[in-house]
Length: 105
Image 1 (cartoon, rainbow, N blue to C red):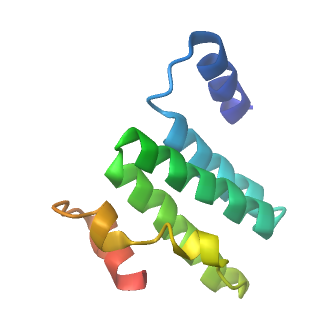
Image 2 (image 1 turned 120 degrees about the vertical axis):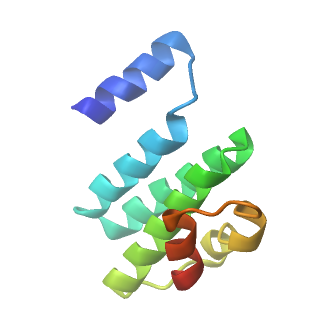
């Protein structure tokens, strides 16, 4: 319900600053029911974050995508792998999320 409300608010106001994070959370939730669809939503979250210049959010989404693929045994599709260039996304960033991402990506 909260995710639906966030999407509705973005659509009404055309404010998109939280879109990548909303998509990341949505992808994690969807993956509990449909792993493949969850991975697609997480990939969209990566794309959104990168297009908005939100590198930290891109790393968060990419990290969730890799964790999901490893946990489910599903292979990352080639187009998803192309999003996971951690060195380009995270250049100059140093946080616990970046360290975790670097370790698994």
